[in-house]
Image (cartoon, rainbow, N blue to C red):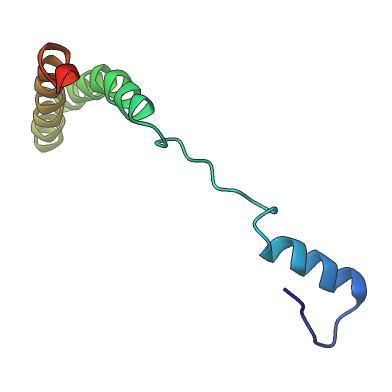
Amino acid sequence: MIIKSIMTDEDRKALEYMLSLEYAMPYQLLKTKNNRRKIIYIMTPVLFLLSIGCYFVKSYPMFYVGMGISIIALIWIIWFQSKGKKI
């Protein structure tokens, strides 16, 4: 990409470098299925503990939401370990 405008050469080169994809490649945490599964395995107990903390500070709606999501994630983990890997 060639940029023509009233700029110094240093500014033009810096802008061309930033516009090229070499400047900042996005970090793709969820690039593979294995990484996605690891996040679910790690976040389920963390969410469960945070839900219990919400119960103790008497934030009952957040407790119910957190427990519901934790239970759904736990059911998915059990299903995946028993049948999902074979599919």
